Length: 118
Image 1: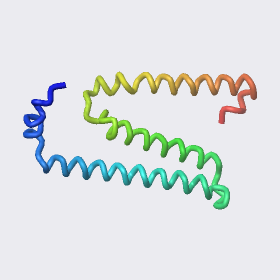
Image 2: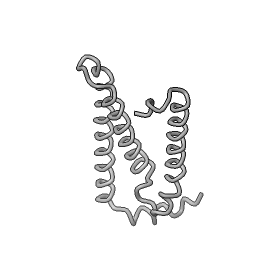
Image 3: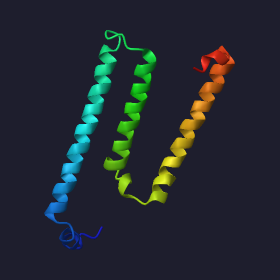
Image 4: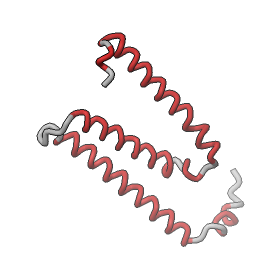
């Protein structure tokens, strides 16, 4: 690895840009902490509050997707990549999840009948 270009690289990135990036990282950290706190709290008290299980389940799914977006977009730096690269990374996972949903529904219908879907 060529370490002679470190000073050249550092000249193009000022302290102002570093402060902005650190601020963004802390904002994302607090968002992820808040979402995780809501998830854990909801998991602890949903029965005592008498919440509907369907509501709790879909809330967990939504909050998990929000956390996954922030982790992949900011901590894995995918938000700053080219759109085609983002699609190339995300598309296989989307297809896999859709396939697993179809397989789960197919097996549920086979085992429990059509009233099992929703």
